[in-house]
Image (cartoon, rainbow, N blue to C red; front, side, top):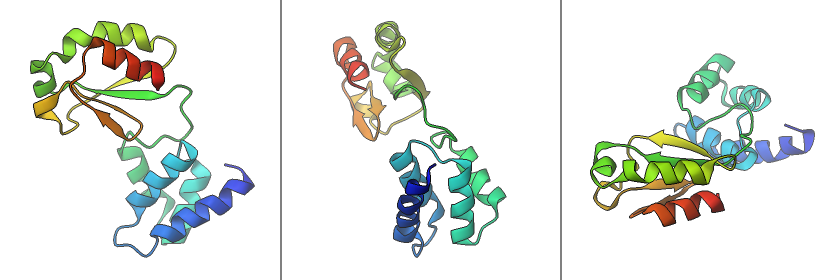
Length: 143
């Protein structure tokens, strides 16, 4: 995180600080704004919320969506839960792996909440359903 980012981090903290349970919304906003929640950001968040660095680290490290450094490639989360398996997600995986090779990271997740209209995937904060090989490959290519 650079010095110029510090002002943005301060604005994010200020926007959520007075909420009940502000830590998760702050971590989510920081991850979205900077692509990670760096150690420097964790220290500043801890200080602003009067928490220990260990408390902030514990929460940030518990949720795998928070990363300490920006990812080199975009992440496509593909639901691998039973409902999406029943709707054919496993048959889509070879094409998804070919489409992602060198471009994106495929990350299995276990329920995106679209059980009735799967297979489903998430790119960024957008969730997509009723996927077939072509739609999933296009999502990966666009990621």
